[in-house]
Length: 506
Image (tube, rainbow, N blue to C red; front, side, top):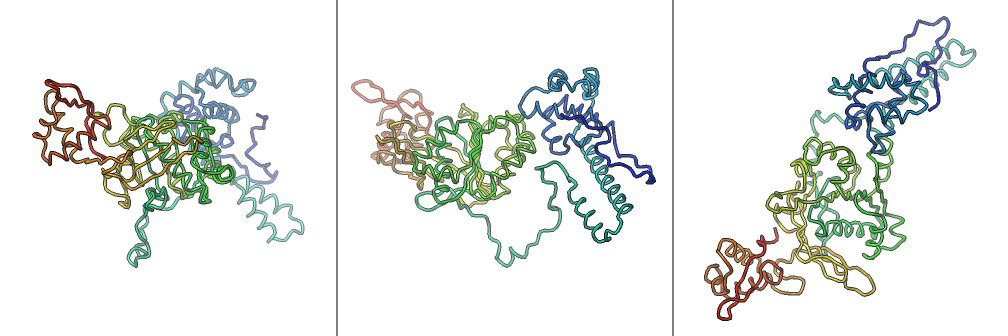
C-alpha cells in the first residue's frame, strides 16, 4: 500500500480560514478493528459498512486492509496472520504490540458493526468538510468565474463524494409506510404465478422474484432438475445464472450439451460462477451485474456456500443471514432463484426440509421441493424421480405434499444424447409402463410394517382392505420397486418381507 499523509482525507485549509478540525473517533476505529480481529464472522456486516479509506488513522487503514485481504481468501484472521499479511507495513501499523492491544480490546466488543457505523459517519463528515473547504477556496480565488459556474462545480464535486461502501446499496424503501392497495382493489394487481421450469403439459413450477429450494439425497436428480430449467431458458434465448459451490464448469457444460443446448447458446446465455472465497462488497457488485437480466439463478451447494461464509447450517440466525446475503439479493433482481440442498440421511429424522435450521423452510418465498428417487439415475439407464411440494408460498403450484412433477432422465442413447423432462405426475404408471396403485401400495406396506415376520400373498389379501386382484398388483409393484423382497416359504409358498416403508409419492 502506498504511504499517504495523515491528513489524506482533509483538503488544505485556507490560511485565513476557520480552524477546521477533522471529525474523528479513535475509540470507534479501534473497536471496529478489534471486533474484526477477534470475531472475523462480523466482517460480513462490517465490510458492508466501512472501507479502509474510512479510517482516519493510517495504522487502522493498513490493519483493516490486511484483515479484509485474509478474510476474502477464507484465511484465518488473528494477530499473527494479520502481522504476516502486513509484512513491511507492520511498523507503520504500530507493530505487533499494537495488534496485541487490539486483540485484548476485542474481547469486550459486543457489536463491531455499531462502531463501524460511527467510523463511517465520521468519514462522511470529513468528506463533506473537505468539499466545503474546496468550495470556499474556489470562492476566494474565483476571479472572473461566474457564480453559477462555481455553484455547478460545487454540485458536481458533491455528487462525487462516496455515500457508502462501493457495491452495497444504501438507499432503502420505507417498508413501514402504508401500502397502496388501489391496484389490488381494481384488480390490476394479481397474485404471483409460476412462470418458469415448465412441465411437458405446460404447467410451470418456479416463481420469478422468489427464492425456491429443492432438497434430496445425493443422486436424486436435484441438479438435473435445475439444469432442465436452465436449458429451457437458454434455448429460448433467455439468460441464466449458476452459482456452483459444489461441481465444476466442465460437468455443467457437458450436461447442458447433452440436454440439447448448443455451444453458442451456452456461451451467450449462461453466466457461470464458481466462488472459492466469501462474498465481499466488490464481489457483490459483480454478482449483481451477472444476475441482472437473467430469468433463473441456480445456487448449487448450500452447505458448501454457508460454510465458505463462516455460517452455521444449524443456526437459524445464520440461515437468515445467508438468505439475505445472496438468494434474496438475486431474487430482488427478477430471476427465480433455485437453491439445491441436501437432506438428512436418516429419513426418520428428516422432517420437512434439508439439513439445517428451520428458517431454511421459513425463509422460502417461492416453493420448497424435495426430490424422491423412484428409479436411480445413471449412465445407460432411465431414471425417474418425484418432485414433491413441501411449501408453496403462493399456492399456484399446489398444496403441501402434492407431487408437482415427475423428473425423467433417459441416458440410454448410444450417441450420448440425454433426454430429460418434467411431466405431470404419473401416479399410476412406472417407467416400464406398469400400473402403480399407490394407495394400496401404502396400505400393504403399512400392513407388513406392523405384522410380525414375512407374510404370504393370501395373508396380505386378508389383512388389507381392497380387491384381491388389486392388492396383488400393489404387492407386485412393491417388489418391483425394491420395497418388498420375496422369500421362499413352507410348502412352496412365497413370503413377502418389507425392506423399506412405502409412503406414496408424498
